[in-house]
Amino acid sequence: MNAHGVPAADFDEFVGQLDLIVQERGGLWEPLSLSTVVLPGRTETHGPWPFEACAAVFTEWLKAELIGIYRLESMGAEPVDLTTDEAHAVLADRSSWRPAAGLYLFPTAKGEAAHLEEWRAVVRDEHA
Image 1 (cartoon, one colour):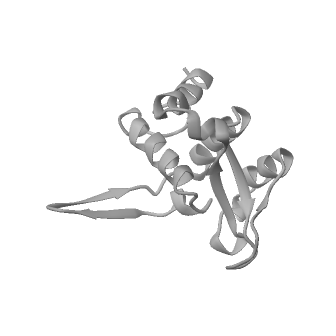
Image 2 (image 1 turned 180 degrees about the vertical axis):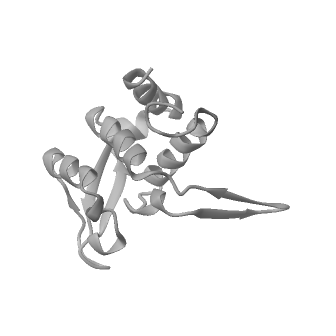
């Protein structure tokens, strides 16, 4: 078990899945649910991941300026980027991690330019 509470054998998958959610501009609640991917000849499942572990990684990426969070009030509405302080607050508040809250992750310009290994290094450096 690593410092994030994720078994060491699952850590790379965990970080890769969180990165994928960010790159796809997914909902903040998504890593807390089971994800199933149907591929030719096989099916993969990922998660659900523990809230505390997800919050810790997203917080580290936010501090490293790799991610941001935006709020989408309704379909068709303009997204509103949260300030860094607001983003830290919602990451710490488990009740914000639900679809009705309308919170989505996105990679910043720095995050878009970074390779996955750079994202992993931020997390490993914090809890090596």
